[in-house]
Amino acid sequence: MKIDIFPKNPHDLYTTPLLQQTAYWSEVKSKLGFIPLAFEIEVREKDLHPSLSSSSRIRDDILILYRKINKEEAVCYSPYGPLLSPDEEIMGDFIESLAEGLREVLPKDVILIRFDLPWFDERDDMDIKSMEIMMNWGTVNHNIRHSFSDMLPSNTTFVDLSPSLDEIVMNMKNKTRYNIRLSQKRGVVVREGSEEDLPIFLSLYKETAQRNGIRNHSSSSFSSLFHTNEDDAVVKLLIAEREGESLAALFLSLSDDRASYLYGASSTLGREHMPTYALQMAAIREAKRNGAREYDMFGVAPEGEENHPLSGLSRFKLGFGGKRVKRMGCWDYVLKKDEAERFFLEERGWQKYHER
Image (cartoon, rainbow, N blue to C red; front, top):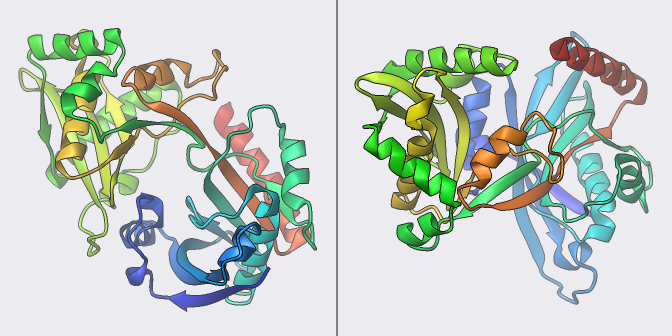
């Protein structure tokens, strides 16, 4: 498969529902030590979809984040990229052709490219080894590997925002509707915050991380969301309060026709007032007001895994009437085998350290 690749300015990335592929996100990540690289992709339509007889060519682009891992080596990561997707039987051929094309235009110290594929995966019964065989089928170099872990959620739920607000509420589970009404009766109100309110979120987030045993992100991960020069996406901070006390908060992103629940945090105190339900209802209203047609609640447990660490959070999110979807997740294309193998070993060590 022949894919033409041309470097472009990240500022010129196309508007997309995928926040992590926007010019806005490239600027956010540049504040956190990544070097954003953008590329135009052009491919024949019939190469992506062999059953078609079309002679037309399809153009799209991809955002890639470059970062050094030591003095001599670097890795590249494409968050939810590429959006451009082929038929299932040639996914591996497409990834290989894209990665080999990128090899020619990326810095020479890159040892692997990690694609966090946003493509929907409807297979429920295929293990990772079988998926790797499928992805490498028909490739030349057999360099595609399933990543040790996903960087962004591969399992999520989308709430359809195209119906009226009343219809959206009616599609929610009874308990969810009850808790939304209860939060209103208990006097919970939601306001839009600003950068000045970031300490409120950080305090709630620290408490949430300690309560759930998760790694705490640095404050710069959140402060970087403010003050960008790009307008292809926007992120809003919403705060749920009762009697002047902040009980929960979330970051809501708006990109093209999609809203996403980006980050959330809550206090143990005041949970009986259901502030997180009020917060999500406010996010849905704000998303609809800004023209979003879907709301990505950004991360649930895999279907059928009742003992998964996200199972409780999943029940909460699914109560809002969304549809489960599963993405392909992270896949690595190895450019330098020995160096990549060392990186994989180190990565497993980091994961085990954070699981202790």
